[in-house]
Image 1 (cartoon, helix red, strand yellow):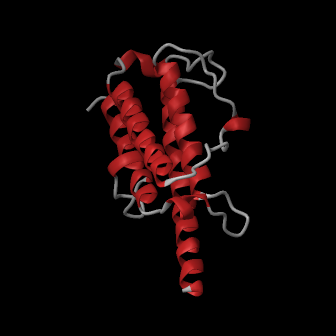
Image 2 (tube, one colour):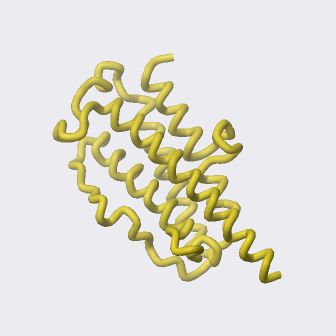
Image 3 (cartoon, helix red, strand yellow):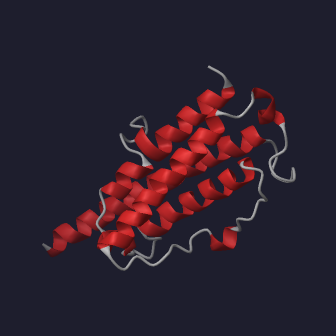
Length: 161
């Protein structure tokens, strides 16, 4: 298995269908949340929606670069999740997560082996491989936060009920 395939499998695991870390993935965690719960803040932490959006924002920004575009994402905007005002909005957001994840995975799986040692974007951030590995680790970090936020929301709901 070459680097492209290995990295694509790791992306797929954290974003869409993995069960290795905490028996979950980002898509699964999003699917366990109602629209209301996704937007709710608990103990001043980022909402589940904000955490999911943060990972999605970077996935879409990386995909833009892999498609030959500029690195246009900014950290300052990475938690600015769109408003979710209806179940339809929430479903559309979850669909976007899945579609954008699949697009990034597809791009990574098709990268030529020699591309992994090239600079990412303008070279400020190291190699392409370093950035994809960093994104995977970053996504797992926020997956852990998301899992904790979801558990806190469940506990809060159980106390009310």
